[in-house]
Length: 263
Ligand SMILES: [Zn+2]
Image (cartoon, rainbow, N blue to C red; front, side, top):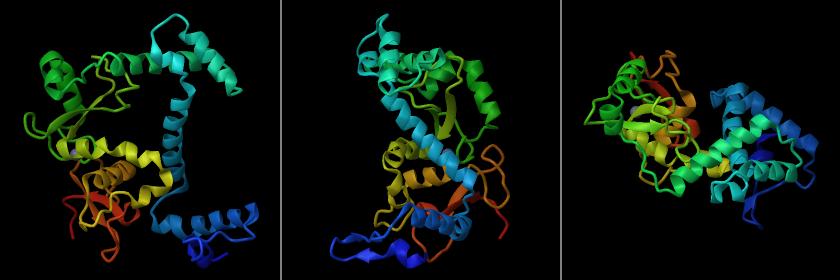
């Protein structure tokens, strides 16, 4: 198993060539090759990859486990509908799973159907002042993703950690964090990344030869800390840079480092 079999081009079909004799055995060998040669240069551990895949799958599975009925109207029959739906998938309708799915469906209806408005940073500051101070204190006054200093009225925005349509918006603030404007805009395009995992590495490269906000956000959220000093956003401002200067602005050629890294 070599590189050629990984990237060979089939000119008649104008696509990746798939080996005629591809068997599960050769696929296992390919995974071994990726593991031994590329995980290191991608600076990804096996557990990091598992975490990424787990998050994507979790959101996709959640979306198929909610029956149509549960999104349409509020009723006492939602739980039975969820139980039937789980059984259609051959799954055990455990009570904790049913309750969790009902909760997500209730949240979704509440926001999607009632046109509920998201809280903004000023809502939180005016109505929940102590929570506002508490979150800002916990984040050391910095953006939760990139660590830049936040200033109310300038670059500070409210973000819902778990997607707003499924998540709660409780005034206890458990689903709130504060982001800078650039990270919040970058996160806005995040669903594009999870929509088709195989294309993640190529999305938003554009032709401008510069780093898009969504790609910047994707790198920050993947690394979560400076790759050199391991400092986190609550300790330092983080920036995204190329690993190999001659490479492209692509997810796997980008890394997160502290903005004030000594040369
Ligand atoms: Zn930020």
